[in-house]
Length: 521
Ligand SMILES: *[C@@H]1O[C@H](CO)[C@@H](O)[C@H](O)[C@H]1NC(C)=O
Ligand SMILES: *[C@@H]1O[C@H](CO)[C@@H](O)[C@H](O)[C@H]1NC(C)=O
Ligand SMILES: *[C@@H]1O[C@H](CO)[C@@H](O)[C@H](O)[C@H]1NC(C)=O
Ligand SMILES: *[C@@H]1O[C@H](CO)[C@@H](O)[C@H](O)[C@H]1NC(C)=O
Ligand SMILES: *[C@@H]1O[C@H](CO)[C@@H](O)[C@H](O)[C@H]1NC(C)=O
Ligand SMILES: *[C@@H]1O[C@H](CO)[C@@H](O)[C@H](O)[C@H]1NC(C)=O
Image 1 (cartoon, rainbow, N blue to C red):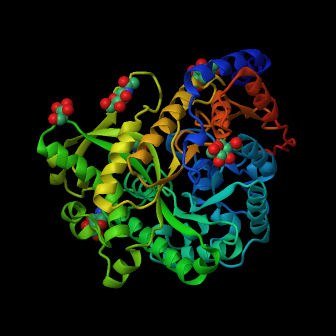
Image 2: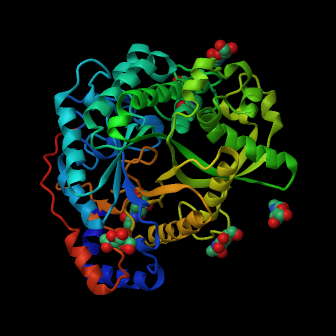
Image 3: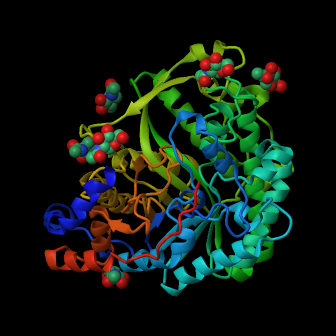
């Protein structure tokens, strides 16, 4: 039923072209040539969301495979067993990226594809896949920006010692990173150790909504184990130390020769005080400390924010002097994913709770802030909030380099290929990037989430952010360009659109893919 409407859409290509031509009038005055030469434009995905081939060539499950197969708490249906099948279609996908004009592709390595059990012998087929993908990108002049951990911990390490709750993870992560640097670092110059470290800790260990579904907060979901008062802090502590250990290794053993950079990624929000009272202004500051300062204070100053020390007390681990020095200065850049802002109200009552979890420690009430965006966009378009956030980080932490690793608009996967709301969002964010650079922000690049309609970690196959639609009932999983891909492609190729150009792009991006042999799930 969903696919039918798309088939009709694709047959009415003329209609698409007409709409595309209209976009040129309203939204394509801007081109990449308006940006500094070294500013990067890219698109993002992650391994479990895009690769498929989950049980092929020696890959073993990650905690996400386990979670998805278990029915995942009713959040959505589906799993990443096949996903976009990029494992088999990477050559065609890289061709699409090259045609589109991407400077960079941000993807992640599946730890349990490279090391089936998280450690021990390297899996030669996993190694070969990533070498092939990286070589294909490099041969097309596309920079690989690689995340080492996009939430998909090898299940073996979760089973053996509880994954991130144990200090043992530091050694195993560092050994994994060592192999990544050694094998791929001649071609990969931008490494991100962890994607959205903050959401990993909060979602997996305080709320229990994400794998490994540990929590102790009665109100939320049924977690069979965990401790929401302590584990989120412990997990973040181990993540910071694992990152810092990998960064030190890179700098001592590889950097001189490979000349690359190593960073960390956070999901960031704008925090807008609900009222102008000092309580709410301080509460918004505290929310920023809890979400962002939790990681950024250690990276820049070597210790956690005062507001967290005060509210979490002894449940917040402390850094020894040696650890503090290791973590401080361990990022060359921060990767940020930006979608939402919150309106923040002080909530001191939550500090009176017994067995407070991370959220109670923050002591705020937050609700979605949409600014003056009164449209029905799923993700409000609020670029000035992003700029305000980045200016405040610059003031408080210094002007360190930033990559916008993710930003995008959500639509229903089965909605129209004419994704006007996505075009509008990209146009406004990319337009305001120019101001941000003019106003002195040290932003190095912008990646759209997501290159394809992937398996969304919070929305399964219902939600979509992609520039290309994939009909899951089509055995070839053909990539079908949405209007946003046409817009981005024109932007990247310095073209103001006219219908002739649009037609060319439409034709050139419909690359047929090799048929996929579907196996019973
Ligand atoms: C898309 O899916 C939603 C929810 O499954 C459904 O309500 C809606 O009718 C579908 N729309 C189309 C165009 O198929
Ligand atoms: C777009 O313009 C910029 C700056 O003039 C130039 O560096 C870049 O090569 C151009 N890109 C294309 C695809 O023509
Ligand atoms: C939690 O588990 C109990 C007992 O199995 C069940 O009665 C309850 O509905 C569950 N709660 C949620 C939120 O799933
Ligand atoms: C969580 O750990 C703390 C500190 O060890 C302890 O006081 C508390 O009782 C634990 N909570 C649960 C629900 O186990
Ligand atoms: C807070 O103060 C600023 C500047 O004085 C003003 O522009 C803004 O409207 C005020 N906001 C609220 C919610 O009162
Ligand atoms: C919304 O408000 C912001 C900040 O005041 C402003 O920069 C932006 O242009 C406004 N957008 C619209 C569509 O009015």
